[in-house]
Image (tube, rainbow, N blue to C red; front, side):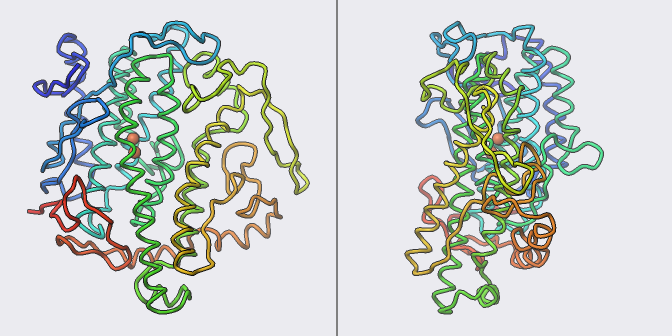
Length: 474
Ligand SMILES: [Fe+2]
Ligand SMILES: [Fe+2]
């Protein structure tokens, strides 16, 4: 079904045919807009921003580009096309019809999954709300706002499901999605990483690389769900999500490129010299990477999880790219995890495969994260330097799961608590690092100009030049 932009809420779900639902969502809409004004991007609400808006949900040409004031962005409800032959792809009900309605016995679990996903979407907008002031270029400013409006739309995607399928409970949850706030002492967002402040653009690039990528894997798991409307909405969200990770990937690449240029000019890899020249040294990039990667790993949950097992058994949440696995029942197989042995070493533990689904997904995520690191290291190697970036171990600095609060070094080796306490400041961004990175953050809001700490991108957006005026201030 094509997207209807005539309605107050653009949609491809024939919203007009369900007046009660339409009215409920139209009632939520002004609350969303209030939230956007209060906690969305600060101070750029009247700027004209070169944004893409979804105009269809098929793979090609789903977006149109044009100048939009953010509060006038057409947030709406877009589900991927329904596949009438779709069958349940995993778990105890493998091969049966997918569900168009929520089965009573899975109602509260599905609601919880949708709320948890939905909560991350506005959280990231809140985390990023001050960054417009310090954007390194108009190109970057536009990308930030594109990410922000789409996270707002992802909230719409989840709120639609809550309103359409979960009755009064769903409507109440939708209200609460606007009441919790990132970092709020009384009503924080549900997941830890989404309460971490993002004060600078290096953190923003790390967040979009590592934490939006967690989002990709969560969405891929939910895109396998037997609850078909959830699967379809996540399928379309994934196409938007790709841009967010592009922003992180190219952002980190450009930071590294700039550092390498300065290292060449100075003929030095001395971090102090590189900083004095206004670029970000590679060891600092590594410490930011350590922070955001390890924080994002916790989002996948415990290595061994009875919840994960029942989500899989019941067909609520599958593995990313479930069709690539041979065994979709996963009832008889085992999975090995390396657990701390309590004496400073590790021991192999066997757990049922279904209980290991969080770790299976985390493993796919880590592989995906590796790809960027490999590319970045190639750049560094080509420039003739021996420094290499690396992902820390999945055991490092964990707060959830079998390695929670077990002191290890970044390679995952268990170490005494005292040693950990003494060294952690050298593994994560120190106050000095953060103050330095913040000192570089000055808004560059002139077309074609770029802050000195980041290289320009290879190309602009939608075939426009890099120096295009992507955001018009007033
Ligand atoms: Fe999102
Ligand atoms: Fe995202």
